[in-house]
Amino acid sequence: MANKNKTFLSHILYTGMVLLLVVAGASAKNISKDSNTTASTKEKFFKSNQDVDNAAETSKTVIGAVEKIRVIPGNFIMKARIDTGASITSIGIDSVEIINEDGEDWAIVTIDDITTRHKVVRYIYVKRHGAKAHKRPVIKLRLTLGEISKNVNVSLANRGNFQYQLLIGRNFLNDRFVVDVSLKNTIAPMEYVEN
Image 1 (cartoon, rainbow, N blue to C red):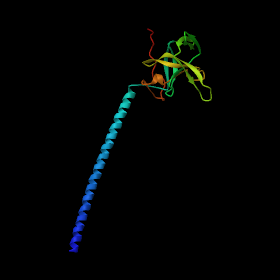
Image 2: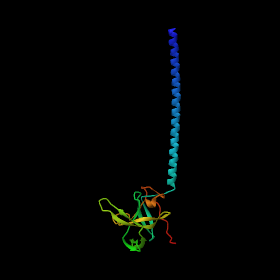
Image 3: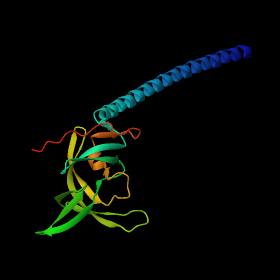
Image 4: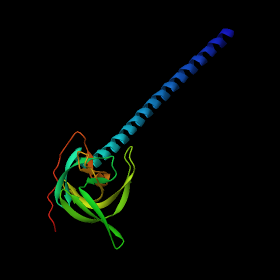
């Protein structure tokens, strides 16, 4: 009788173990299936977001680290350094005279022997490493690169020590251009026709 009980208990234990292994195997299979679904879902999510990013980038014009920009007024072309680190565009000037008329500041600006008059939009303070901060007037200029022409705030600077007299900042680049620093002179500015 004791042997029959041992055999019966052995069968119950054996059957219980088999059932446990079957259930564990099914659970492992479901977990694996869920993780594949999750991975697939993640993959689709990232791919669709990447496609959106790529679509946004492809609607923008790719430009290089140096481009030719048309400057208005004056209708002259300058080589410009494209600087995504600069928040505001800056132009090198030969001279500037600030005059006040009826409480408003005006800048008499000479660039490449062309003198123009502009309302001062505001002043900014620029500090270079190891130097005192200095005040720069900001005016509006129309800049053209390729088919894009835009009125932007431009700070007036003495850029005599720099290779490029025009530095194009994010206020011109935002939402219009993607910069590939391995390129130069990718597009010419369109012609300017005065109305």
